[in-house]
Image (tube, rainbow, N blue to C red):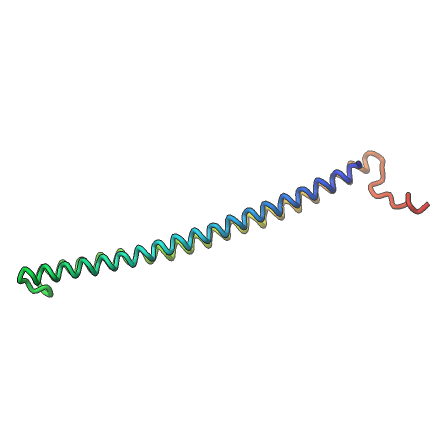
Length: 154
């Protein structure tokens, strides 16, 4: 087998490897998006749980104040209710922000993986071209024509 034939086989293998690497990176990108969505859903659930807990706490404050003969809409009962609401809303907003951040970071990571796949594919093209050039050069150094099309014309 000639140097050029070896180069063609090697270049083909490099292109195949680049395509497979790109597929692997695209799979990682898809996985990153799924993980981001999953994290966002978890944060949204956390936000809903915070609101539920806040409502339960507010109900408890009002019920205990009323049971103790205290006006639940004034004084220390109102202060405690306001504090509970303030903290609940703060935690709710943090959870909602975390959901948005998780989705955004997943998209960003997926883009990085896709770019890496494109780079791997481009690199395989460059390597394949170099391998072909090297094979052609070695074939010509051995004194054999790289492509002998005149042999069949006789």
